[in-house]
Image 1 (cartoon, rainbow, N blue to C red):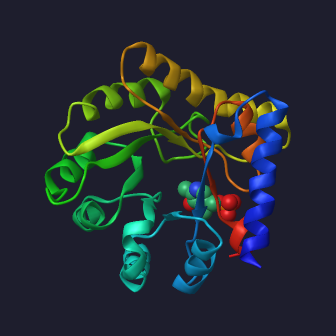
Image 2 (cartoon, rainbow, N blue to C red):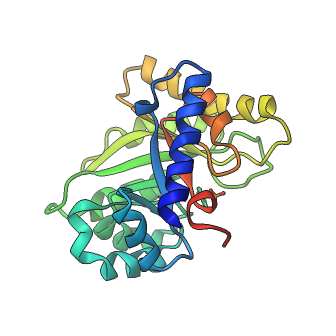
Length: 226
Ligand SMILES: *Cc1c(COP(=O)(O)O)cnc(C)c1O
């Protein structure tokens, strides 16, 4: 049952925080519902989960429409790669975008965010592997983009997101996440008002939390195998 799985993930978060002396309330859980039907989202919602991540824009929008009665109580996050021709539909339907990786995309989201909605929360996607994983910007470029995005109207820059390649040991995984954490600390020391490090998935949430993640994106451990 989804409620039990959610409970288990919450327990993993608490344990991971305790292990490194962090307050469990400093880590948010984003339930990644890609490929699962609206009914599964509703089941998780009824178990108390209110933030959901979707990778594919059309699929996400279809679920948002299907669950429109719950719209005011659900936060929808777009976490997948974003092409320019999809920015309008994202700006009109989602609350967050984690995968901004170029200024053009950010400018379009800024222009297309309806004034009837609040600011769109955004994260810059960073590549912390140095090439192996093609999505996202190297830390230095991600920082530069963050400075530009912070100046755009109708967007609220929240932080960085990264998806490192899986590593076979905790220390290696944590070291990759730490690269995002360093860029985040640097941006904050420059005065950017960031509060989000979107790091960690089902297999590596403990290492991500050890490195400072404030939002873990969990699919398989809640909804099962895709
Ligand atoms: C699918 C996906 C997740 C969730 O991955 P799990 O391993 O199923 O927890 C998190 N983030 C992104 C960007 C994803 O595409």
